[in-house]
Length: 457
Image (cartoon, rainbow, N blue to C red):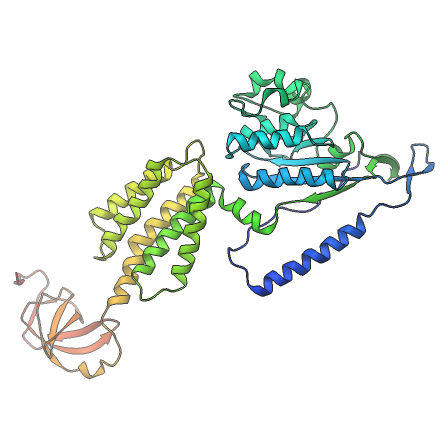
């Protein structure tokens, strides 16, 4: 059989704000696309079909097949999209619906999963599920939805199963799927095993084109290609995926996105607390926090894990105020690790996600935030050239850094050269570097490194 090209591509998430110009551009694109699809899919009066012996014959409208791309966890957004697409396909006169499925499970309530299963089972046209491409899976509630379909296809290298306890009424499942439920409940099956169990028809479905060709009602033709005969569809596949705005909420409902957005949002809000006014960081942080909360509200979470993540931010903030990692930094680090491991109930985070979340947060609060606070509240460094050659006295040991008093004002200082300067020594300002005054002792005031120097109580 001839391999059909793959249509469409995965929808990409966008930012949570859209400018007026972008909205207008998207509206124009959608109108133009609708017109193109409308003209391109309009039924023709006759269709030329070539039979195996090379004869051409006329046929009526070959029809269209709706192909729905469903990727990621089966959340309320994706479930509503599939339900709506199946209903729309029936009203639009499609001859069949194919759900291209790649899902590791379902996070929708049992009631919504059952409603989706009934929509598929009671659809006025055949509904099929193809698990693909290679490497895809259909697990948990997604596998139960596949079991309701009129036919199932698995690409090579895919797996189906781990349904768990049934949330879909058993009478809606296909007889072969019900018969294999004991095996599917806690395990998975491959393409060849699905054929042996009768869950999948005994025909190739390596790519979605081959699967569509084998569906009942789909018109095909046999043509000669490079000296051999191949079968290709006459019925037109029409691919659809989540709209842009739905794709955004579907994406943030994945465990990795919800976890990282929640951490980023809290970290940026803390950052904004130590700056003057409300800036870009605060707005981005508030948006990230809101999206992260939405994702966590959809996903199954443990309250203890969520509380530990919040506690970690509070603990880090305590030490940020003093600018030095201390006891509370350790508490925050432990709470962050524990919260990251416990936050999701039944869902796991990859080690890459954990490394980015935990490592990035620790680096931000241990190095980034203290540096920002020191810069934000440090003594201004402009208009201080008048201090050059001024004489003052050290109020603490300079070894090499300390504090000096010049004209009754205290300044952070550093000695120039080796050795230390004892407390109450006379010093002269010889330069300015950043927030520090560079000083040197007046003759006879330097003490050697390692010598005793009195430090004020």
